[in-house]
Image (tube, rainbow, N blue to C red):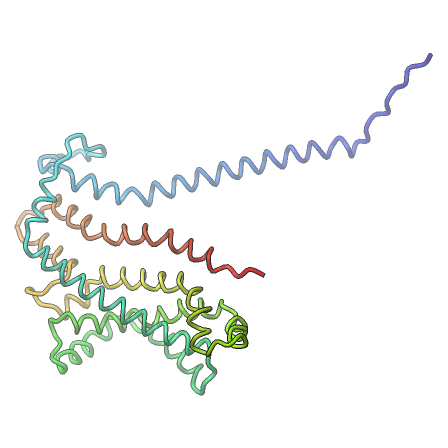
Length: 299
């Protein structure tokens, strides 16, 4: 009785699994390298924030040391107490909140209406309006300081929350129009037409169909407007005086109030100024992702 021997597999069949294993190994190496690069990039971006937090909690005696303190073993809250005990800080906080609130509401509303008009309507001069928005974005802000100052002086709005808010609205609106126009263009107009066929009016179809899908765009524009108005320094320096300061101006006053620079107080003040924006962004980021998912159109 003769034994049956299996024929050897062709060379092509043996090389296919080998190539697959090599491909998986190569893909795993690429993923590991990408993960390492992402971690290194995150550490580099996070280090300034860590240094600010560590310095804000560092005792004054450690600042005089010639050796950098990377790990703070004796944290203190004396710098935060000094900042929070300064009456000018709370006055500047009030001014910044008022200016930011007015700028965000007015700028986002105006940009939203302009973006809808440019995206949904075909009117004469539409391309000229788009070109003007681009040109405005190219003008350096410093070139407008004198004219802006003269304008507010003629309106008797120098050193006022309303006057500074008007200038911030002018900065925020052009860029927000571009942001919101992209979101409006991304919503098919056929959805509004279908709602109008079902009995909705033109405004009703827009409010019920398109507006909910523009939530992520409105949030994005509001975040940009908040960061711009909250952190802006040069225009506030030109328009506002010592008795009516925003938080960036207060930080300059606080750092130069004494002959010896209070680095701990500066770091504590910078952290308190940045904290509201960080918290707002982290809170709204999840809502942006949820809004993008909820805005998906199902076939």
